[in-house]
Length: 595
Image (tube, rainbow, N blue to C red):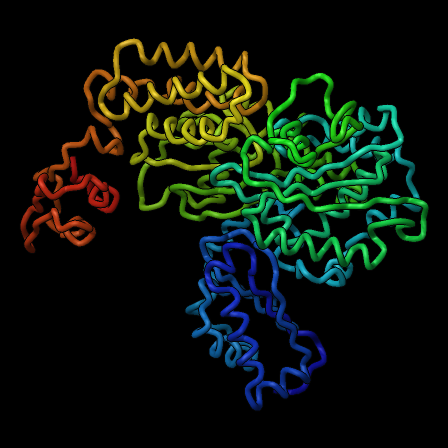
């Protein structure tokens, strides 16, 4: 190789999924390979840089590695292991020849076709632990512009003009919320970033913080200047150790560089930002419970009004926004409100980040423009249903969201359309289900979560959700009674009306939507004592259907207790005395031959 002063960059995904898949080992392997005699000298001449980055989206393919060579477009390698590194270094970096057998194929790039990576544009590019890397990509330019060129009122007007709505789930207009807080009387005000994110299957906020913590800090600086506050908190659950580690470092370095503290960037603007680790209570995602937790009290919601904008943290005016909301702000300031408002729909502007999980081929973190349909999200971005099975439903909005059936797949993803369909935007969790999912059991699963996470302060939520859960348990175990469906509906509506906070008010949504769209499954459980999806173990007989068995032996191989007998060319047989009803045979049989 001839000497070349252009930079070669190796980007290694070191988000939670990348680390869990062996990201540290892959980084060590690159470091070891670069130190080999001959390779090391050439790489030093060519200025090679290895960089840990945040999540770039397609978590199911980690460890993901991007190779950036001068004169060539970036090439992504999937499922990278330390054993693959020598070939990638020698053939690709050394000789300029892509190692095709490991390089990402068309389906990888199809994952990004309909995405609009706006908030996430630097995730996968920026080193989350290097402030200079963030600054080199335009980081902190927005707060510089705000402090030099804009008044607080102008900042609020720009955010209002952009149409940005809170990304934490409620969708309240951000600029309006800021206006209320700024107008509140008092010299001492507080700003809080809600990074609690306790929804099952949700990892949007965590990935933003892990991948680019400085963009959240910069967004909070803009908000603090607009509202007129000097003190702020990032409230992050302790179960996110990587996010906490990177936030702590980002806060320390930002203060050392003069972006936090007194006289920020040589002005009289002052803002001090602290990290508060939460204990993992889902209810603390509700802003008044979160505020109580910061104050050292038990995380329990408070009655509203007064709203936090008037009386919040330590009874002072307080503004609470979530991670994604803050991450949008530097972009709105730099690109302008008009550009931001050009994306999305009339009432739902910009983009939305979703955690796509469940029975879909490509699981991971996606960012799409508002207005894209649910069908496009699942089948175009997510690649469709895994294992060639049929789509049944998708739950949007976390454990309190609704389950949407196939005939509503063309519903646009925006705040109002999802609510009309019985779901909600929520923080952005999307769980896809196929024909093997029992919708009664799905309702039972999500209600189990919200019932356990109820703080117990109000009776409708504490007692009502427990009563609903008892009924669902009866139904899934074959003890359902006539009238149970109607009782569930009555209880759900009462709980929604009477509960104190958003947890109780939305907890019945999975039950109501599954009854609305999949009532026949409830009736089959109650009247016929059967589970059509063959998921409720106590309603399954576990026998092999002779007419559907292909004599392949898959069920025999996956049975963990040896309850299945099989010989080549013969129909399998299940010994019920040994069967523990684990459902491994049902899950793995591609021919649906187990009844």
